[in-house]
Every structure is written in C-alpha cells, then in structure tokens.
Image (cartoon, rainbow, N blue to C red; front, side):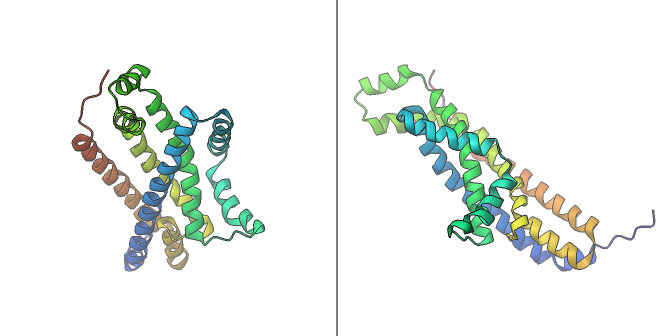
Length: 223
C-alpha cells in the first residue's frame, strides 16, 4: 500500500475539532436537560392525566419514535420557515434533539414511575405526606435510581446521534471534520481522528455517569 498518511494538516486545524466537540457537548447536555423536563411532564400526563392529554402525549411519542431523526431535523429547519418560524442551525439542532430525546425519555420515566407500587403511595398518604411529598420522596426518588442507567445510555446515544445535525450546517464536531476534510482532502485521517474523539467522549461520559451512579444512587429501594 503506497498511501501516504497526512495527519499534519488535520492537527494544524485541531482547534476547529475542539470547538466542534465543545458544541457537540453543549448541544447534547442542553437537549438532554430540556428533553428530560419535557419527558417528566409527559410521563406525569401519561400516568395521571386526563384521557385527551394522554392521547396527545401518545401521538407525540409515537410520531417521534417511528420517524427518522434526519426527517425531524429537516422538518424543523426547512419546513417551519414556511410558517414564519426561522431558527438558526444550532437552535434548530437543539430543538430537534430536545423533541427527539423527550419522546424516548418519556417512556423511560413513565416506566420508572409505574414501577412504584400503589401500596407505597397509599402508605405515604396514610402517614400524612402531602401530594408533592409523596411524588418527590416515594415516587421520584426510587424511580430516579431505577431509570438513571437508561437515561445516561440515552444521553450517549443522543450525543452520537447529534452528528446528524451537521447536515443543516450546525457547527458540531462532525461539521468541523467535514469542513477540514473539504479543505485538506485528507478524508481518512480526518474521519479517523473524529472517530477517536467520539469514542473518547462516549467512554469518558460513560465512566463519569457510572461514578455518579455509585455515589449518588446507592440508597436502598423499598420493596
């Protein structure tokens, strides 16, 4: 094989990759935070809301889970301007990621809430706890420990999926790599470096979340 590796032009533009990686992290954390808020509201609506509201949440969840993320982001970035709603590439990317992760996290949180037995809720009420105290201490605290691994896995998946947002010119890590590749024509080297960077991000956050789980969610679960 006579191929001459050309890593020098890649590393001379490494600051662009670092900036893209930072944007990927910001988009992922922002979407996960906002998506979790959406998911908690939808999960409560699904478990305790009126029938019409449960139907609307079901429509949202099924629509997102059964359509490609690429189409969802195209809809937000290219279709919404027809209705007068124009978003910058990064804001459109954050919105699409939030809507997507919100649907998946809704089912995760709903399963966590429904894993709490009705007897525990009734016991809390009998002890004189207020409704919010029952929800906070008897439902959400044990449910959070149960759903934490699934939510962190969803974050890793979200971060990797966010590479799709480069198709609308959002300035993430994949977009930075595409830009450097078009300038240097060192496709093998650029995408090898990007692959390693995504791998480091995934393994690093997995280790961080595992450490948080050991220290923050080591309390026993009532059965």
